[in-house]
Image (tube, rainbow, N blue to C red):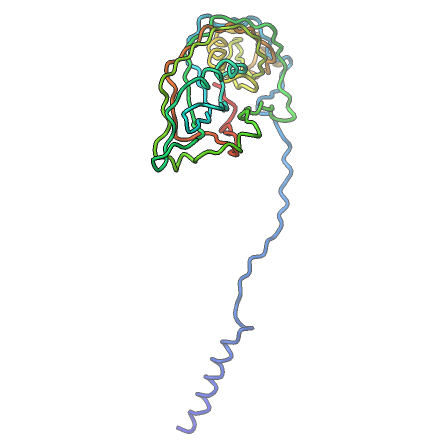
Length: 290
C-alpha cells in the first residue's frame, strides 16, 4: 500500500496540470482580407457587328384597348373629407392633374378607432379603362449598344409628397377598426394628344423582325401598346462579316400619342400603401420587357 501512494499523487498532479487555463485551446475568429479580382463591366446586349440594326417602318397600333392602373394615398380627416392626395403610381406623366380634383371632391365616411372618428392616410387604387386611339413615331434613332457597360434604366419616380404631409395627424391603419368608405365615385377623363420620349433596347433577328424588347425609359401605361406595335416593325438587320446576324439595337425617339377617353366607376380601398416618411416603392427585378 505504501508503494502505491506516490503513483496516486503523480496522477493527481498530472490531472491538475491538465486543467490550467493557459493550456486550454481557444478558437478565435480572425478576419483575413481577400482581394477580389477586378472584373471589367460588360454590356450583354453589345455584339461585334459591322452595322447595327436600322428601323425602316415603325407603325403604331390604332384603337388599342387597355386598363391603366393608378395608385395613390389620400388623407381623409375626421369629417370624411379628402384634404390631400399623393400619387405613387401613374401610367404616364400629367394624369395626376386630371385625377387630383376628382379624388379630393369624393366624400368618405371617416375611419374609426375605439368608436371615434380618426384621420388616416388611405391607400387607393383606380383602374382606368380606355384605349389609345392612335400614335405616330415622330423620330427614332438606332445605335449599337456600348460594350463598355450595361445600359442605364430610368429610375421609377417616387411619390410627389410635400414636406407638410408628415405633419398631418394620422392614425396608423393597423390601429383602425373601420376603414373609410366612399359614398360615390365616378371618373371620366377626356382624351388628349401629347408627345412622349422613349428609350429601349430591341433584339432584331436576321429577318429584320423584332424578337425581344427591354424598356430603359418609357411610361408604364404605354409599354403594352408599344410591345404590341413593335411586332409589326421592320428593320434592316445588323450586318456581320458573313451577312445579316441577330443583334440588339438601342432606340431613342419620341412618339405622338392620341389618347381616348378614360373612365372608372370604382375606387379601391386597400390595407397597405405609402404614408409620409415611408420609402418610395422600389422597382423589383430586371427592366420590364418581353
